[in-house]
Image (tube, rainbow, N blue to C red; front, side, top):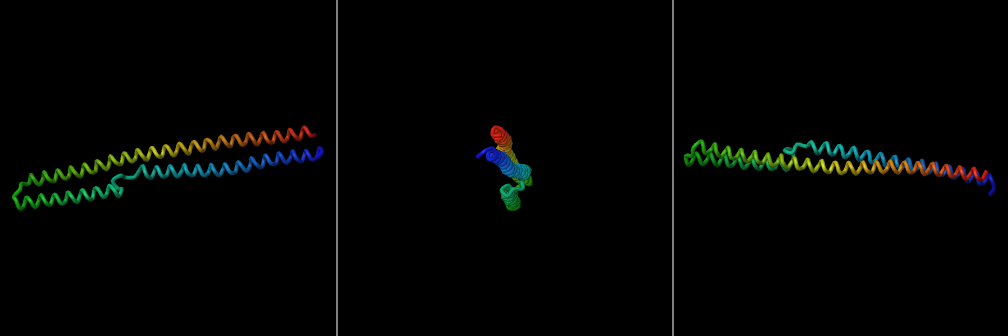
Length: 165
């Protein structure tokens, strides 16, 4: 093959090393952009879900609506019983107070459930965020390894060329 053939082979080795490094770098850049996009999506999900008003959720609204309907019916029954049986205003007031207490307890339970939900959302966010950050860190480490391998490949091809010449 001779000196010229070896020199051409060595320069092809250098070119292949550089091309491989550039290709790997482009692929890693796409992966990094994808991971960074997922980090932003996770943050948006967290911001949206964590700051939701627990009392405005459909399940909470249903509980409040049912509680209010039951209270309204009991208040009407108490007022009707007072009119028919001659009950006192105090008994109607006591029934209304008990009903208001029931509404307050329902709201309190909704708030407690909302806090538990927030804790779950935060835990899920932190877990996903840590996983994505680990992947980004691993990607950076792989990128550093690829650069080192490309440099080593170029140096080895240059060394081979030098020994031929």
